[in-house]
Structure formats: C-alpha cells, structure tokens
Length: 388
Image 1: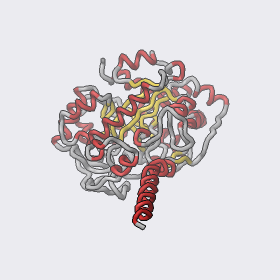
Image 2: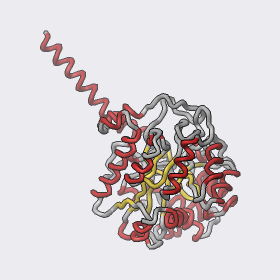
Image 3: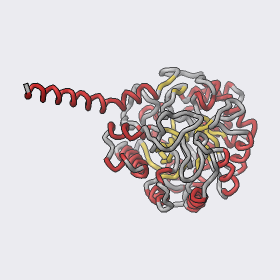
Image 4: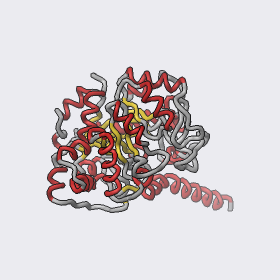
C-alpha cells in the first residue's frame, strides 16, 4: 500500500510539474494574439514600396517568453523568420522585469509581481527569481545567444559605427535584422546608480524610466502617486544622457514627462504609445507632450493595440499616425507595436505591409511613408547612439 501511495504521489507531482512547465507557452499563446490571422496581402504598389523600405519597430517583448527567436511559430507576434518575412530591418527588443498582480491601466501598486512564477516555469536562472537586475541581464543574454546562433541573420547594434556598417542609410542586405536592447522601466537598477553602467555594458541603449507602477525614479502613468522624477530619477536621467542612452517615456506619468522635457539636452522617444487626440487614455500622449517631445527632436512610436489606438483595425493605427504627423510633422512619427506584450494586435509582424498600404491610402507620399515606417528611427539612432 505504501509503495502504491508513493507511486501515486510521484505521479501527481510529475503531472503538476508538467502542467507548471507548459503553462508559459499556454499563457503566451492566449495573450499574444492577432485580430486578423496571416497570411496578409496588400496592393501591388504598397507591396513594392514596402519591400524597398527600412522598416523599424521600437518595441517588442519577445524576450519575456520561452519561444526561440530563431524558430518560426504559429502563435505570438514575432520571431526572426517572421521579422524577415515582414521586411523588418530593425527591431528594438525590450526587457520586462516586473508586472504587478491585477494589472490595469488606471492604478497599480509596486508591492506584488506576477512574473516570478512565469520565470520559474520557464527555468530561468535562480538569480532571476529575486533580482530585477538579473532578469534584465538574462534577457540580454538571451538576445545575444540568438544573435550568435543566427548565422548572421541578426546583429545587435550598440553604437553609431555598428549601425552605419550595417545600413549606410539603407535597409541591411541579405535579410539581416538589426537588433537593439531596451528596458521597460528602470526598476532593474534596484535603486543603485552604478547599475546604469551594468546595463550599458550588457548592450542596453534605450531606457524606459517606468512601467506599470511607480518606482525609485518616479511616477508611472498607471501608478498610485503618478508623481514626477525623484532626486534619484534626476541623477539617472543625467547619467543616461552622459552615456548616450536614449530615454523612453512610454508609461511615464505626465509629471515625469514634464520633468524630463525640462532637463533633457538630447532627443527623447516614446517607444509604444497612443495619442489623446484619437484615443483618450491614461498612457496616451497629450498634444502638449507630443509637441514637447517633438521639440527635442524625438520620435513617437504608435502602438497597434486597443489601449493605444482604441481599435484593432489598421485604420485606427493610421488615424493616430495622421493626427501626430499633422500636429508636429511626419519626421516625429514611428512604429511601436508592443508585439508580444501580452496584447491582441491587429496582425503579427508579417503584416506590416498593411500599414504601408494604409499610409498610402491615407494620402501620405512615398517619402513620408518611408520616414514613418523606419526612416525617422534610423535618423535618430544614427545621431544619438554612442559614437563607439
């Protein structure tokens, strides 16, 4: 009897572990969805133009999940084969390190985290279970391993010289993907200014200040206090500028945006956002902030999800792009999908030609389409990445 009982317990434990370790892919499959499944087709003119463009996307959270970036999947939004099919030239990969339980757009505390169990289930190193810095660094390692194993299909860029070597102002040849590392919120600093250097050395070049909760730097658009930059936050902003690391104001509270705009000496960006003029919401930019960001020479990446553009149709994305371009000029608008960020998107990355077609149908010239689809991001990075 005892032997049978032991076997039964072992079986239940094995089943439980099996469910636990398969849970991440189940969650991934059910949260990173598309409203319009592939394949995607567009008119001949749009397709021909899209194939000539330098296409850049400012925000993707694929590093959070257990998918292998080098393999093609039938769920989620991106992987290297699909990015290549979608003619993407440059992808910013962001690192998510903490997400409060009961996540919402309105008000979140910082005293809980729903990601620890996900990381355990994905067999991340034990060091990542309790350290936000370790989580960011591990995701950097994941991207570097993928780049190394891509046989030249993907290359991580850290400075202007590396970017120039791959582009010379044009889409990289041979279907190569340029990758940049970003962090979604700077809570991985763990309150220590010296950790800016640790992230820099790991390849991070675009730095979001806050995510869904207030942190040591300042307020989130979704936090409890929604305050401005703290004294530590101001120190970090100065350090980021000294190291030529781009500041990302996505998810930042209005007061943090105001504080950064008041002290920045360099262009800032917003990696994935909507605008209040077409979609009111706590994380979307006001006209005043759109103008302020543009005045720095920065760019704003328009997201593809409901909370950003109030719809899941390509037309909703185009509407937000048109509004922003009319307000401050085409040169300040970019793409910021939020792919793989636990969202439902209009399409996966193979469907970006639909945005090219939508922009043409909305009356944008081919040169304006080229700027929006990636030219503006390329120009910003060519000027603002570290020199070497």
